[in-house]
Image (cartoon, rainbow, N blue to C red):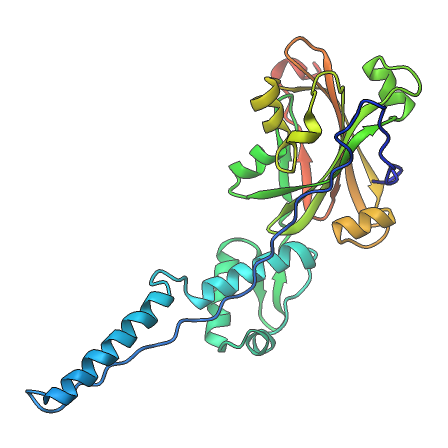
Amino acid sequence: MGNHARFPVRRDRHDHAGDHRCGHRARHGLAGGTQALHLRESKPAVPAASSLRKFVFAGANMSRQLAKEPLDEAPRYRKLADTLAREIRSDYAPGELLPAEVALARRFGVNRHTVRRALDELVAAGMVTRHQGRGTQIVDRRLDYAVNAASKVTHNLAALGIATQTECLAQGLQVPPEAIAQRFGYGPGEALLCVDTLRSVDGAPLMLLRHWFDPERVPGWERRYRGGSTRALLDQHYGLQLFRRRVRIEGISATRDDSRRLQCPLNAPLLQLASDNVDHDGTLVEVSISRARADRLAYHIDFAPTDEVPS
């Protein structure tokens, strides 16, 4: 992450947990439509026994076929809209144009009416706009993250109806930069617990995070953490609720590692947020450093009335 090169995990002699690499991200493709089933009504009012046997046999086959295909399967246009929404979040920048309807219909094996219905869904969701003569354009849909003392990325995005996935990339004892060690009151050469994670939305990478923990506050962490919310594990297992004491936000450029992990161009703009997180007693437990794609995330800070500067 940025100036934070991938680290060889260091451990003292008593650390047997080792370095863990864990988690994976699932991707979802476009499912096909259901197959229509038809029954032909026989002309005789009273079918012969042989015809009746054929009808019963066909009905049994139909029942087996229906059992294979869910009755509540979403319409194809909605599935297509979901697929396009995922691609817009991961592959398109604000202002870019989607391929023409004909090209989308050919690519996904559907008719243009289905494509139009799917695009209507995206327009209604505020993700794209239509311009006559130009096509369908991507709208600036950066996720809005409120930064305050108690805010959490996962909870913030969940409040917007957005599910996130957090993958554990690496974790282990590591000697931190001197400035971070000093904030914990540690001396030169003393190790902290370092945890690297990747947070994604709809399978599209959004943010890299590096967490520095005081290992004495989270014993056994490496045995327990395999991905997901670090705050949830801190709360549920260690009884720690953390609050931001200090935050620093700055713009940086993506390194090669950032580019590979976040699937963005080299030197693309990123937003870096460094946060000192303390417990109820004000004791520092974690220093977290996140690096997010600036084209997909925006931070905002609300000030309490007591924070306002008098005119």
